[in-house]
Length: 64
Image 1 (spheres, rainbow, N blue to C red):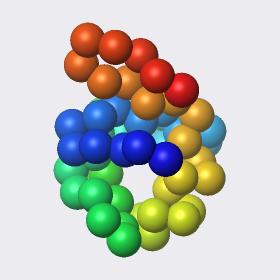
Image 2: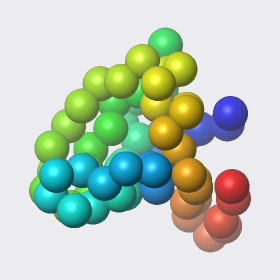
Image 3: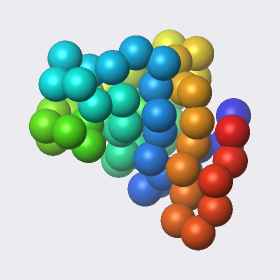
Image 4: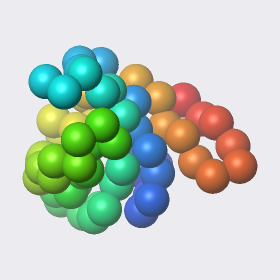
């Protein structure tokens, strides 16, 4: 899956704050994501994060 820095990911499950959108801060073996609702940051293993992605939003385009 092609995930880049500054992409916004829409996940399958919502964060406890209610937001499903996360900003990508770091890409590698782990993803560092920031919740767009409350600003909470988490690190997830790539495999777990990729299973949870529903949509990827990029600047100027929309991809699945």
